[in-house]
Length: 403
Image (cartoon, rainbow, N blue to C red):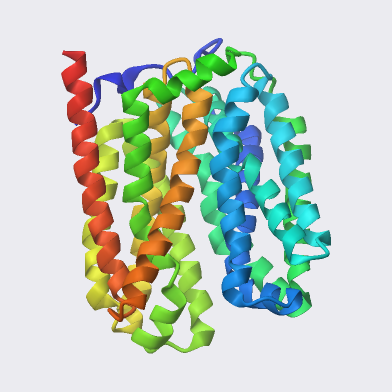
């Protein structure tokens, strides 16, 4: 099942490529690795941050919310206002801003300044992934755009396997600020790699703010973003409470929880690769397949969570199915946005952060209602079902308007 718009070119290119620009792809993915590390390491260090700053753990959670708010605000704002900026220059500037935000996190003297620093660190997140995805699609061989997008997203997934566990361990043993020192170093290394290995990307047309904002008038863009904001929430409904689920429901020793979290990250890596391959064969089919897999896996996790082995397998599969959705959504947004691709691609990550917040909130509601720690998986399966229905409507309206 393929949308009529899915064959449009992602971005104007000077010539069709037949080989991969590996150093540039690695540089772009390194930025994703740094962003993924800073986004998720805060969750693992909340008790340490709360203790050091003299606030409660729920209050310390405002630092996580501030970062997510920065992503939601920064994605459309930066993509629109910087529409005329050359793409390579914009990528470098975004990573410089990201590095500064994490340095500010390291030196924040009070909790209030820490919250501001996390907001600033989140601002470049969505715009970076949006521009980096378009750049990767331009540098990829013909017919392999989605694999290129997945390669950039692979940095984000790899962060959950290596970056987040390592930075969390460092923060727990040397102090939470040291974790963000590591992130700032990754940001600096990304700036150097982008300058050295990414070409000038002269094949991109520069647009203007009004052209980019035109993406918000396109129903297919808005509907695709809604699919991501709803469907992706299922993964976060479970992931947010996975630690307590594993210890209290699965009966797993607390020391083994990081191993399961690493399995979750490995699942994300596998899902990114599979999602990219499927999306190159048919974007809409890939999205449907990922959402359907999420429905089955999240529903099955309600029972699987009661055994440590099946719970570990379930965590891997949840990460895989969730990550498999991202390349298809990103590619479809670039397809349906016409000349407003930068904003549309950046908004995808704003939508995913809304999914993060909504999934965590809904999961918390059912736990607070006394339904137990398997209830978020039921909520997640429901969100995935709603995602399937929304995407069915999205494809139907796309075909109807093209007839």
